[in-house]
Length: 271
Length: 315
Image (cartoon, rainbow over all chains, first blue to last red; front, top):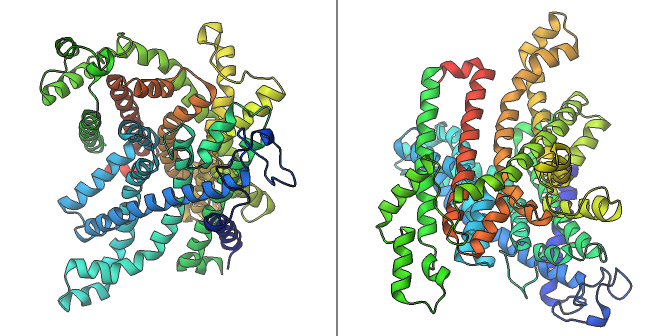
């Protein structure tokens, strides 16, 4: 197992565990305000300090992890659910008009600066976690369609596909029974990368007030709150920032490690 | 070559047409009538109707779309519902901040990424390579708005080298203008530099394994000469693609960074317009951003053909 895989796996596990743990336990209730204790730097009672309302930052970070993970996870799910079938369809009709249409549609989505459109969608249809998911998810669709198509094309040219066709299987059945399993590795690696991009996008949207709304804690929102207080309570900005970095770094390393492990070509070249 | 350009030009026109349709209809389905919003909910129906006529909102959708597109082509972006000033004028004022910021950030990103990427590739597997790659992993993971806050904390609040926000204006001189855009540009450039550096490294490594590089060495070129004369030029295709893509990230990323530094750029204009339901401004700014991205990608496609002669005969 590669070093990337281990470090990435550990960092990701840490964040996921913190998020899961927050369902049953946090050091303090994340909504509990204690004004006399506000803006405390990290200390024995509040390990990561308190914010401007005297809320415990560790508890907010733990519950905030839930928001980040949920938004990014569902956004990746949306992208895969729509993008993968589109990619398979395009690959099956390689060179046909449907392939052209799907791929040109993808080019078009890529031409839109994703953050601008995310801001537009959330601003028009209202700020909130659901709209943030849709906004981030839309941009995952072409990514997965492209990866699936690219991975599926060489598979579709193989003999076992012809054998399946001769045995009377239709396009859809071949795609799901034979092609999908063979491109799964690519999709897992891409999903990890999109997941980390989703975490960053969610943080950015929450930061400008278009993501999850208070009282739901989110890391981006915590950074927005910290901005005006950064000179007197730098820990309020440092800690959520580090939480984002650890999560994204963990996922990226995990993605790299998985690619090394799952891609036989890379494995051979390393040996 | 001509056929290549024609094909790209055709796809450029189609992309622009579809993009404009998408933007127009997304804005169309937005809830809320601009006229009602401007006059307040207690206004008289006939006043609202008069304003709708004045704003050109009473004609059918398709006609409004054609009016909008026709206007865009002639530089008439309409009039802002809120400020009652021409949108084109508002955008051009803001562009003087956003465009230099994006170019400044792109320049910084390239200046950081090229040497580090080349260095990492030339030290493949050694400590220097590991250090650069570790740093780029971190660079990709850092949210740029958080990095911006940290830069403000260190360089504006503690060291007082820069101001914490705002833009002094170009009338104070080029140096002063660039100085006030430096922290925003660094925060925008960092993640992009990390990505570009990784691309540069892997593109160079791919090229270094090619037969023509061995031939170049066999001809008697030193490793360095072969790298400069043949390696870099061939590694430029993926690097150019990423630089092209980055421009759109920088323009979009600037929207968030402008919030951190209170810069009077396009990003803040979009936010203010969204809050004021000044949808004609939102529509035009988004179209302008998409137009820029599509044009930059077109330019990158043409640059491919210049860098790689094989592409000229293909497609």
